[in-house]
Image (cartoon, rainbow, N blue to C red; front, side, top):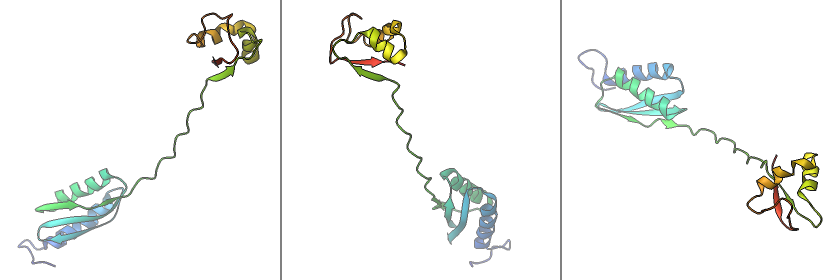
Amino acid sequence: MGLFDMFGKSFEDQVQEAINTVGATTPGVSGLHAEVHGKVITLQGKADSREAANLAMQKIDQAVKADNIVNAIEVEKAPEPEPVPEPVSAERFYEVVSGDTLGAISQKYYGKASDYMKIFEANQDILDNPDLIKPGQNLRIPE
């Protein structure tokens, strides 16, 4: 304990009282304690977030007239979020073999040969004519 102020409570007692109140009323903060050196307070403990640690420091600052407050509250690392799985590509591909037509491929994937234009439109970067496809071409088959 330090010397008693003219007003009754020592600075250390004021800090301890503030620590007890703030520790009990600040969500996300646990094990709050302080080291006092003169009129400098070093806060220690654990917090769920940087915001909770800062809130505790602000409350102490409002409760006690210190020259300086050092916030050494340890922010617990949040658990790593589970990795988001790569989205499954909605695109399918088909490699053209000898004898294929867009109508036949359309029949295979859509159940209707008349939907061949869907395949042609999705592959205009490699097809100029829906009637001219070549073995070995990889065609996008849209949903």
